[in-house]
Length: 123
Image 1 (cartoon, rainbow, N blue to C red):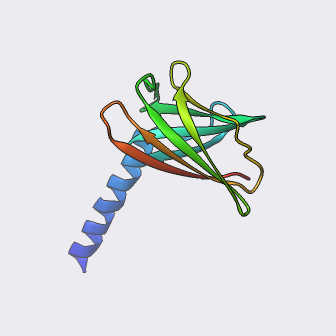
Image 2 (image 1 turned 30 degrees about the horizontal axis):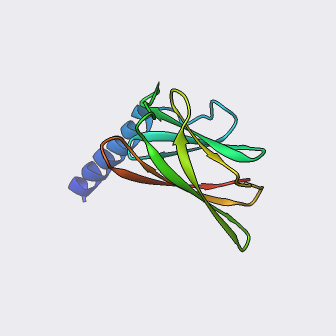
Image 3 (image 1 turned 30 degrees about the vertical axis):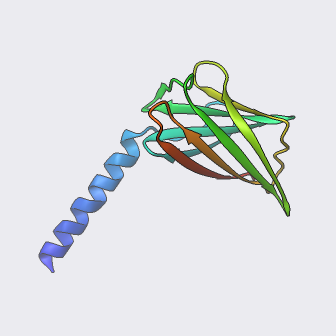
């Protein structure tokens, strides 16, 4: 039992350390923040689209060679739009409506070809 408690404490310490090591996950642009694959993603809905900011360990990530797709579920409506680089650490999607209650999935492919999927719930 004692070994189990020591192992559990060690595991929880590692999890807590990793959560802190990847930033505090606070929105910097008024959006919704999620962490996936050691990157922090902030989805910011716009009047006719969305901006996805990407941060790597508290530093803006280079999105110039990233690409992806944004899938938006508004009730029974499903929209898919491309994510394109737009500035230092931004990807943008145009011609999509993100409303309160929407479920959004961002599929982002990095310069290394690795795909990351991030899910957001808009409140």
